Image 1: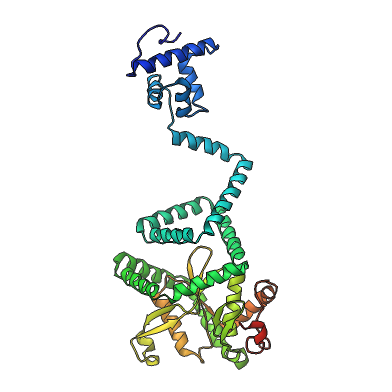
Image 2: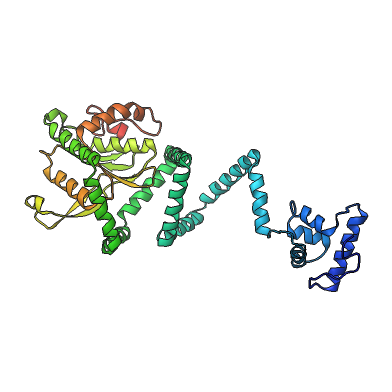
Length: 394
């Protein structure tokens, strides 16, 4: 029989009213045939019940219940801990998980349609990304998760690509996204912040050390050197006028399916490839380059400006530059800028699209672009904005 029913005092400081309720509750347990007494009932009940529910059944406060657990040396969990355990058990149920995923998706979709919520969400995200501590924690957690779970990284890439494809398949969303990108790129404040951030980074000794180390690592990498040499060899080998970038139609203008002012059919078609693949991008990003001694003869000033064709966000959330280049004999200044950019900004991957590479892209993507519903089609010598304004024009 319990020490309560034997009339022995218990070494916990509770009011007489609470003690009376505890004794009465234990007596009721014995009357109902539960012979284990209050300690056993507490231990077994807490496996499926919270402290709040137990306290209601006994008729005392949660504080008194925790003192009883401590007195009998029974482990107990707070409400958050009990909720977490209950939730973990529920998540093992595939039907419950699927139902909650649908509910959360619908709820978030409804929230995203609220303009005020979207403004608040983006502001909170920007504020968080401006916090070094947040960026460091996010980077460490992401790196750890991807290293420990390679399948998570692969699934994330697939899901991100599918989400972007779905987004760009919606004409309304596509126009909204393009408008946002244009607004950001043309915003003077954004350019100013970008410039100030770059200057601030270069004042950081640790940042300069990382960049210097990256330069030396890359220059000592035979694979990287071979790729750069191949780029130059391919460009220099294209001596036939029929195989040069400049010989193709440089048709300037806005395309109806892009809402994008392309300077040539090359740019227009490459933009269509990015849209088809669901890649976020913007164009005409300006980089200020320091003219090195090697190229002083080509420039009249100590610095020069380089307007890039495409800055693309790859599946790893990294920025990658794609630049469409003419033959070096036709555009020596452009190639000088490319080499200075690669040297002065080694942390940003740079991909050069030569005429030969463009023809490979044509073989791989032309038919796919032509069969993509939200794109008008691949521009060619015979069929482009200039020759078919009704088809491609705004």
